[in-house]
Length: 261
Image (cartoon, rainbow, N blue to C red; front, side):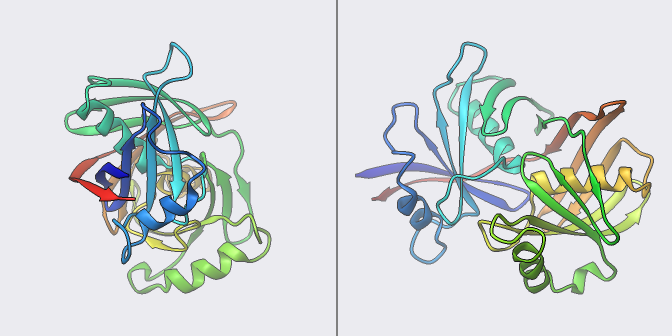
């Protein structure tokens, strides 16, 4: 089988996207997805997404996301933004989108060249002595460090990801350094990729909320500097927690190709 694919990136977080509205690819073919994501024997990517037909009349499409290890995963924020850009490219949407992912329904808008993706509300942030834990569609451990640019993210992140209290289920791990009241630098170790990535959308969302919850900032619009570029997170604080959360940033098509499977 010859498979047509598209490569997208959002602040360096890169993805293979397949238009699967005709069910050309089985969602059970995890070995294929892992091979396609392999950077030496495949196309190479942090993850793979299938754009599929919607399951209800309210949606424009369905998002199905797989980690680089081939396993279907929890929500990917940068992936969601890239899939919205792809949906516009193939004419499924124009400037706005409604779609369902593994964590539920999302709204999105393409405005001034940036994709604004609404994330799920967050009602609970767990606070510990040296870190916070929360779920922004994917689980995230957030901890502040000094000297982020020289920090050993791959090794320290791996130990936290596999250690107590996460163990087998694992958690993404975010290391944060405050630059000023409205800007934070972030580096992320992602489970499923099992390495540092240049950016993580659900991760920077978790960081923005954690920094507000721990009073590192009073702002409700926060800029996040990742190794792959800048993202913004906006939100509203309510009696129920954090709502109207938007992840904002670029999503670019890198190339289109065909691969023999």
